[in-house]
Length: 124
Image (cartoon, rainbow, N blue to C red; front, side):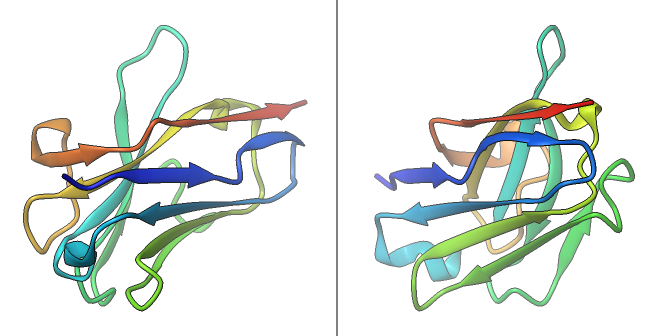
């Protein structure tokens, strides 16, 4: 069982930045792809960024491309999401996700473990 603990969410003004962190409890973290999902009120949970086990392959949904950066530190069992130029439409609960494979999860069905979620609110 892998436990994921997110931190770094909060309230920020539009145009501001936040950095989310996700610390994993287990040593197999380095062999797993990781990702970040978000779920806004009344909407489905969506994958927004993912990274492969070695950090070399990343993918972003168009709505965050150029503004968000996913990275990982396998020595610290931690994955990050740097969020810049935040917009009100980025307001959502953000979830860290661990894949069952070496690639980051692109859909919820590919997720083996979820974090508890952290709220990000962007005011206009």
